[in-house]
Image (cartoon, rainbow, N blue to C red; front, side, top):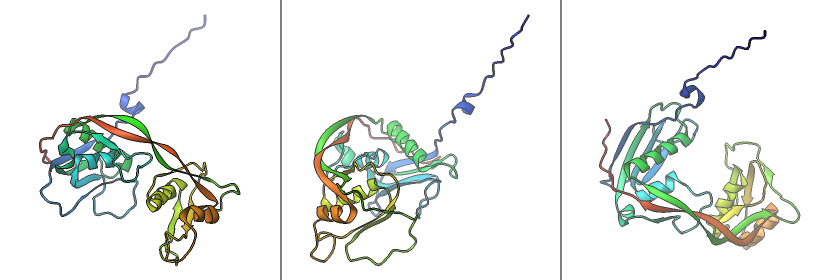
Length: 253
């Protein structure tokens, strides 16, 4: 007679789903000075130079609305208008300082720190919100009829080349990043709809960006990059605040 043995192994949940990191120390208090005003998180995966120690999120003289904008950045940014709606009046008039340190400062990534900062906002401010989508006028960046004229990037640039004054220059970047730079230039939101993947070196000269009589940004994008800006309605995501309370000051342990 054939005997079948079934072996069942029980694994600890932490082996199946690694536990998310959390802040070991959190200090949140009203800001007493506007000498500095910023919010930043320094994760182990970020190489930018910063005075913020590794594995920490630090905010100086920021309102709750500004903290939400940092912790929940929109996929497509609407120029000149906040994408956070509602909430009590104090979210724009009361400023806070935050210092938060991860349990493991050497391995916490930037994304993990942002997730932990979100937890601080929901727990300390009792923040509740929902998302809504609304259409606004903007531009779609698409491939021109003759195809793109983009220069694939060879990697990070160590020295900045000599450029015409006012030229738009963005090396080693995806098209979505360049679209955001264009939106700042034309003061209207631009979303990438080229479908092109990879990193490119972007250089754009136009009458609006330089000191010479040249084409408009719209013409320069087409002639120099082989792309095109098409006016269209773009869906924007808004955060609608349902509830928020002023937190009690929480000095570090």
